Length: 243
Image 1 (cartoon, rainbow, N blue to C red):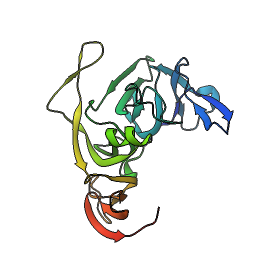
Image 2: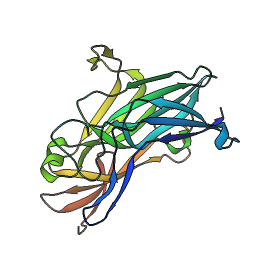
Image 3: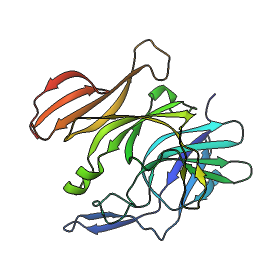
Image 4: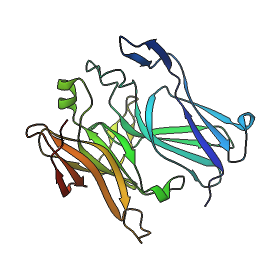
């Protein structure tokens, strides 16, 4: 199925100009957030806007049509911006996979978390051939909360595989007291003081299966100052790289 819409996610934020204080981006919690859906061959006047709960998003997982009425948007969502730097006094920077279902006929919005509060995650990725169409799997980098708090910057100590069509074994209670239906997540943790960056999904050549491929990422061990290229937790090459 071909998508009929271009999907634009708009996060309302305030841009600062104080270069010397490194405050180039400031997230404004007081402003609203909205998602705009534009027909593929439409223009600015044809955008349909959906107001959603305030949030901060940097990276989308995927957007696609589900049936004839709904457009689905999935992303890693937090309640505050990690830029210019983490504030460890609260959990507003905790990023979880989130889903918005936008009804093009009624204008209704249904939104919910897809992952729990065990791990914070970001930098999502999927098989590129499934961009814009309904997909079953996704992947993210997993935040090491202790290392991030100690260093004052985000550090990712593992990877996660997301199963969008498989429910988790357990449920958690939301802030409103209702139970949240979560999806199954498989976690792969690196050895201690080892962190990754720049993860990407590489599909297997000649295969048409969505999950048939590898996650390739750079990992760095801060104890040994050694960096390696990892194949979804299976080592494929060693490289000693200077920082």
